[in-house]
Length: 215
Image (tube, one colour):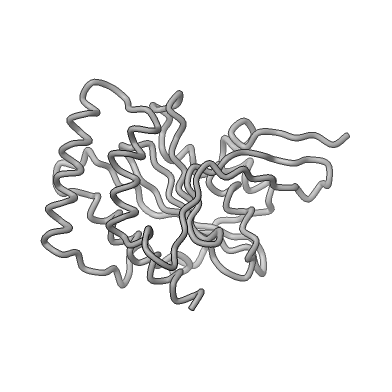
């Protein structure tokens, strides 16, 4: 009997995502080199802006976990702007409804993508405010499910999952067989450096990659 399930209820582990979509994690370390190779340098002004963003976030965060809207306001939006993902030819859509039909022909997954950018090539998944203590890695299966809705199976798609405190990038390629990989975990609570610099560098790198693909 046909059934429709919520992505957030079904995709809670990587094993579930792999089983539903016949996914496997790429074995080639070069599969997702965009997050750690050929990263653009940041200007002094960009680094100063990131220091301010981190300081403000940690100040607001000190009273407890922040709601999804606050994370978007304090972190996601400024980072997308700095990365050039708000400029032409990029288009931003938010709260986009998505339906994904599974291979069994009986099950449909549905949900809403927080932020969808440029022709279904980049997804930003912010953990729901009611789950602000949800570990960021546990949101990867949800991100993979949304990325499977990419209507361009011959092109890679990218995702960023965050709960505000942590950031993890994901890459998915549907052809010839679905495979994925993800980056290191970048934390705003690192004492040694501002890891928002890593996040911005990777976003800039993805921006360049996507622009080259659609040129």
